[in-house]
Image 1 (cartoon, one colour):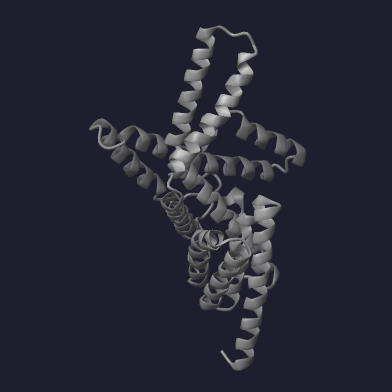
Image 2 (cartoon, one colour):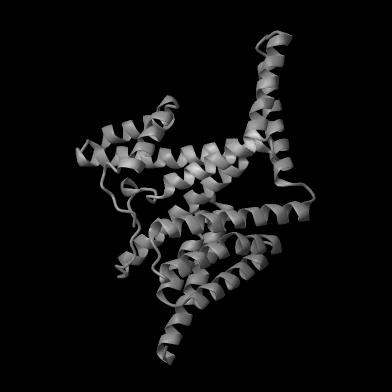
Length: 314
């Protein structure tokens, strides 16, 4: 890289740093959802220039946020989004397959979330699970106070209270699966937007598969089978937290199959050139109507074996 290129790269890194600081401030103070796109500029910078410029930009951006807001915010932003940005840049520069990019970045972001949760628990003296349980209990207590005005019997009130306690226990039990699914969503969102921007500015070798072409690798079913057998053995021998492990594995596997089934549905709706309004209604009902979930997951399972769409894993 000559001196002129270095100057351009440093200038671009400076602009990206400023952009991410603004993005973070908007996300923290105005529109929370914007914060989820914080890694996108770093990914674009790292792919266009070099990984070290991306790392430098992440560190400077987090440092400035630490000064402008507070130290912990800067540290948490660095720990949460830094590894994800670096993983994306590394994998995209290595031209890895899209499914590998998604799997690795999902796991990296999940690891970052766990790190931040553990660190915040250590700093504030209360674990994330305890905080979540307290928040849910407060929310349900408000609901119970409202229900008391409905002239229900003590028996009915105790049944409602028991049901609320069960919901809290269930939500805490499925927390690992929920965090993994959330991590996958964040990874895909950043991958999709970064890829779209990079293609727009001339980097045509970035390929992010459209949702309707989503497909698990051919050996994924074998992997799922091995996970199921291992989980079943843990459950059978009643080993450590076997019920929670089994529940979380079930949710993750069913979610992946549901996503593939939904991709099959979108593929055939597009193939038949279905009216956009009708297509939207079908997809909303498929997601919102719970009895449809198992059917769509089954379609995803069959597609992973037969490959209806003749889609190649990219």
